[in-house]
Image 1 (cartoon, rainbow, N blue to C red):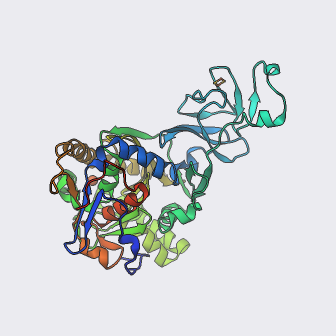
Image 2: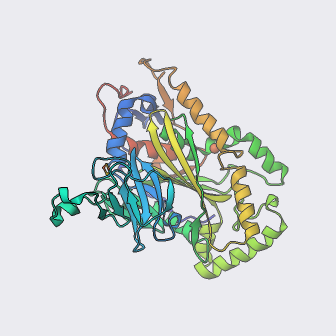
Image 3: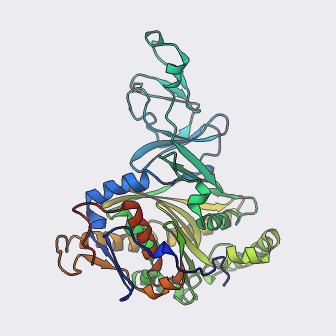
Length: 446
Ligand code: FES
Ligand SMILES: [Fe+2]
């Protein structure tokens, strides 16, 4: 298996930043205090220190392909309008009327040149300027005042390979600096289609009664795959596909980003054929692989195509580049509630029968009613319920969750087995530095 990730010497990436984490390098143990999943004070600190001060995944530019197309969605609790303006520029505005703060656009999606507030009918162009002000003679007419009534843009907007990110803090580093090593794995995904990639219309939306960090842990956790998804594993075996956990790795990509590289459960539409995909797809996969090798070069094509990947981009983007390709976005609502949105990401110009197979495959596993996702949701909802059992039990390690598995590998480099918990530890170390101490809440350092 090829990977672009060399082992690197140990650096201060192994440090932690608060006492929610108990890390013992002699005993090789790593524990997380369960208050981190359930306390309002932690949630509020995260909203400020993480969601308020880092790049957040907003959406893909192919969701709004035509001038005037818009979507509304909420990130970090702030309602937003994601729109391609009449000049073709991708914009993100706070979805609050500059007049008195009313939610301006109350549709989830559409196409428009103007947004009109229902309260007093102020109207704004999709490029943000005020277009109409009823009874405007009662207002000052100087341009400074009129300009101040424009839609509020988010302070930063950046696009990498069509993935649109925003930040509510204009001092954040450049987007590519934030993405770091994660950027190239997004590029790999974007180069799969020779004519490009696009999201499909429609979004899968669901709410989970669990803390958002449990969704991150679950996605970076190869250890749970065989026991939790035993129905799916059995189904794969029946279709003639052997599943293994060997030679699969989890990578710490730095700055809280993580990556699982999976070869043991590796059927991917157009990349790696499995019997359940049918004979026609086998022939198409061979020609697709040949096309990629010619276009990208043999080595790069092999890196893109030979393994499934789950990429986590801190703090709210998951790319499931396995089976079909799913973009998933996390939006924390309360300490114990997370909204999830997911889109299918497909090759432009894909034949209809392949598209149908892709959607069926996605729906059977990663989709909200598939053989995997309901298992995963049950797992993190069960964790969320269970972590209240030990609340307030301050002695010993009763109120701590264990993530020590395979910790010795953290000392040799940023790569460990996918069935260990290294990608979770790297996430939590970064999280601990962003959140810092919270008086009266953090667990006592062990
Ligand atoms: S609050 Fe929107 S026009 Fe008054
Ligand atoms: Fe799972």
